[in-house]
Image 1 (cartoon, rainbow, N blue to C red):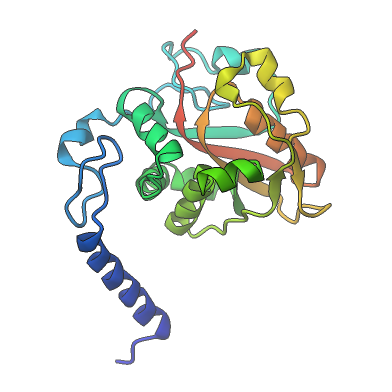
Image 2 (image 1 turned 180 degrees about the vertical axis):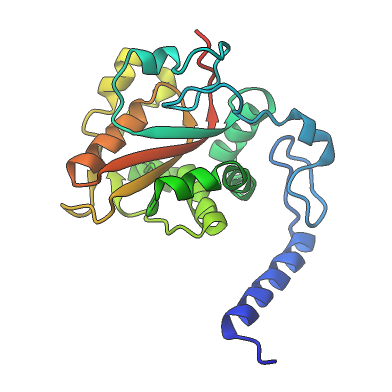
Length: 249
């Protein structure tokens, strides 16, 4: 039986990746210890993973303490430009430390694990809403050059490989070097991001877009990016993030 060129290429890629795993072993995305070939996470850390499941906000995906509620306090009192969002993990404990290393310590290999978990949890949702493209939330150019990569883009590309959905990293770009959101209060965050994003083209050719980012807090970043895309012709904007805080209050 003749093997197709694509199949042969995929086999060569898998073989090369397996060999590299011996030479440059991956690290556990939770504790950063070396992994055995084929492992995605060390066995002792599996019990420490805290997915953002159960009762969650119907708008942003924050976990809720009261199952009778439909929305977190933020979404109940604020208008968002995005249609709906999902989060993979609760942003606490080992995931919090993991995302710090992913973002600031060049642990880009963690992106494959995050994306695999995202696809496992939300592939059905992504298909149902009809996502046409995944767009990473962009960094300001000088910040990305200094860091060497955009963690949201790393996650988006890995999610694209896991779901088969195309990724467009050039559709949206950041035009202002904004203050890190973690250093601001909610009011400051809203105005910090005002007009922070622009598009490469005047018209968006996609109707339904999935934004990808590492952490969701108040939604200011997602709202400003969503607003920019909607004004250019997109009809619905969704998002998926790796970590999210609880919406208990």
